[in-house]
Every structure is written in C-alpha cells, then in structure tokens.
Image (tube, rainbow, N blue to C red; front, side, top):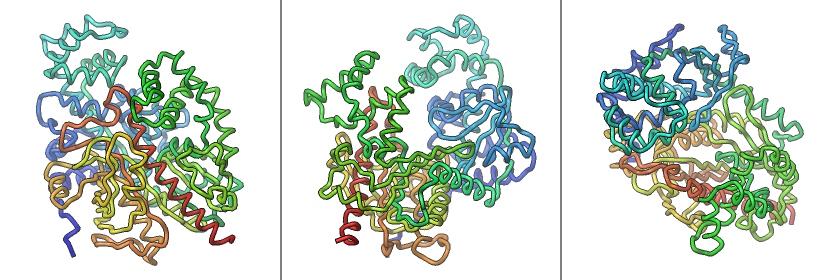
Length: 574
C-alpha cells in the first residue's frame, strides 16, 4: 500500500505543546512570558517574525481579531467549561459583562477590570488560545517598545481618539513602528475606530498575561457536552430524537436555513429597497450587474447575503423570519451559558417546494412530506470538539443516516475560494489516516460554484491548531500529497469509526471507512494559502464573493440529503 501516514516530527512544535500543557497542570496562574521562547522557537507559519524586533503586523491582526477588544486591559485569562466552574473558584462570571471577538466564536466574560473568562469545549480550545495569547503579547510588547522610542513619543499626542487617520499619518505611524504603509493600512482596516485607543494602550504599558486553567479533565469536557445536549433538548422538547433518523451536518447557522426556508427570496423587493436606501453602494452595483447578466453571480446567494445585512439593521424583523422558519420545520437551539455552539433542527416532512431554493427542487421532492427524518445542523466546532459533538448526538438519536462536514481550510495547491473534497484525511489528534468514500464529488458542487474551482480526490490533514505549523511541518505534508489543511474532519471521522465498529477509534493506524453504511461527505472552501501571500475570503473589496463557495457546498450537501431521503421514502412506502 502507498505510504499514507506522514511523519511530521517537529521537535520545536512538540516542545511548545508539552511546555504549555505541563505548565497548565499548575493550580495557580501561569505567566505567558514563560512560553515566549518556545513559541518563538517553533517558527510558526502564522508568526514568522516572532523573534525579530520588527513588528509582525499579520500576526498582530490575526490575534487581535480572535480576542475581545477588552484584551487591552486584561492581565489574567481564566479557562473553564461552564459558568459554574468559574463560580466554584470564586469568579462570579454570571455578573460579568459578556464579550466576544470578531473572528472566533467563543463565549467570554469580562469583569470590567483585568480578568477575562473564556469558555472552552475541548483541548483544541487550549491549543488555540495559548498561542494566540502568546503571539499577541509578543507583538503588543514590540509595539510598546517602538512607540516609546524618544523620536516617536510625540506622534500619539497629536492624535485625538475620533481622528480618521490620513494616509500621511498612517505613513508616519508605519515609520514610527518600523513597517511599511501597506502593513499599517491593513492594521487600520482591522482596528478601525479603535486604532488610536489601541496604540495609546500599547504605548502606556507592556502586556504580561497570566493564564489559569480551572478544570481540564476529560470528565469536565464531557459534562459540558452533556449540558450542551440537554440545552438542545430543552429548546426542542417535542422532538423524539431517540426515534429519528438523522442527517448530521456541520456547517454554519445561515446557509442551510436560508436555502430551506426561502425567506430571503420572498423579501426580494424589500431587500432591494433596503440596499438602495441604506447606502450599500457596492451591493447595489453588484445587484445591477447580476440583473444585467454582466457577472455570473447567483441571484439567490445575493439575497441571502443582503438579508444578513438587513436583519443587522432591522432586528425587529427577526421575529418574522423565525415564524417563517418554524412553518417550514426549522427549530433553533441557541447555545446558552456554556460553549458557543448553536444547533438547528430541520424536519424534512415540512418541506415547502414553493419556497425552497430552486437549486434544491429535485424531482419528487414532495415525497419528503412522508419522511420522519431530521437534519441536525450545528455551527461548526473547533478541533476535537467535533468528535465529542458527533459522539453525543449519535448516542441520543435513533440512527445516523449521514455525516456531512463543510468548513474553511487552507490550501497548498488551489486558490482562495476553491472547494476541496478529500477522500483521505490524516488526523493529528489520533494520528490515524482515514480512507473513505466521500459521497460528494466535483460534479455535485461545480454547477453551483461561480468563481472558484472544485478539486476532489484530495488529501486533507486535521491539524491541532492554526499556529502549530511551521514550514518543515507543512512541507512534509505537501510532499506526501496533502493539500487541504483544516481542523475538524479527522475528529469527525474518529466519531464515525465508532458508529460502525464495536471499539474506540485506534491510534496511529491507516483506517478504512469504506464499509460505512451511511453517507460521509466532506467539503472545505479555501480561505487562505499558508505557503504564499494569498488573501483570505474577507480580504477582497466585496466580501459578498465569500458567499459563493459556502452556498455551493451547502447546495450540494442539501441536494444529497434530499435525494437520499426521497429514495428512502420511496422504498419504504411504495
């Protein structure tokens, strides 16, 4: 058999991971400063200039977007699975302010002074949080040093907090901190109106984070997962899960429900009036080009994106959307208190062929009205949490009829916006390499993807964390033909193994899942290129284009589910 399991052995990354886990065993606070040397030594692809005096603007932007804005005042970061864990240790987080970050879904509470509590769902959150805090502290302290050089101190004095910085001021700031205008403009785009307050905070004091892990046993994580499941049941009390066949989907909380409900498509005229009156000139220009067939963009995708903007500005209409969703069998189970993982239940027998996205109108779709199956959709989790979620769901439902995974990834051979469909997944958590029949193919997705390319028969690797990769590590995978880098597929396949075998998933083996009796479908859309200077999906002039791969994959997944269920209903009723 072809050698499939890559050996990545990066001593520097292993040393870093071992170091922070050994430190977190302490019952007290751990200074992030003790991790700086090992963090710098691993030469992370996300933090290539960690050791240099030069500011690594990309790392500073990446980390600041994944931390709440109050991080400028925080000194102590607490980690735990549920609010009662913090309260047991004397931290009444229920009385604190709930805060969030721009680019990471993680429930957080701030005491208004110097303490931040972060809810974690699995050890993958630790593998994410610790490198982010360390990188942020390194770059913050570089910024502090640059801004306190004698020739630079006067620069901030001349700015007011409400200032819109001019190009000349940005160029002067770049010169003050030793970076070019392009870098400082990217930082300004990320920080926006917080730019001057952030700079003043950085100039005022160095960052000295400490971290304390309040509960880190496997039992603690499983208790948190049990509370998550009980919360789902409390929001959907009439659903007899133990009697249901379930199509499990890990995606997001907008694409499947938009496609199924058709709510945005019913509001076309209202949405057009909104983008004309609300000053969304970019969206209006895009719409006019779509109507004139000047661009190949999907009209349906456009309205789904516009609806998101509309509801942000008109939250009072969310109740109307909820009513429409309930009418077509969509139940919402928002996460509460614990880790941030929303769920949605779609009753297939409530299908409305008149409202559903036209791309889903398969022949005999009316047969779904005789279905007793559900789609159980979750907002994709982080890393090993995927294993715990699918395991918990499968223990509590009648039958898993399919497992479908859609999420972001990095690509080593494609472009940003491409869709990668793997048939081999190496999982860095279990060290297993999974071989499986991916029920999704390029032909299933390509008709609905406008701007990218669909690459199937790919090989993916599920990594432990975004920072925990360096050029040596990535090079080993690329030489072995791995081109799709993400975080959840491997843990999901470990859970899928336990759905078809009588034992727990193995470790460090080549594992065949070709005999699975249910669908396994995995599609990733590329959001960055770690081996080049590629942009992410949010880096373009119109972020609407990022909707294209999301909905192409979502349409393909829903079409597959609808087709499978029509066949099941036909064979069991005719």
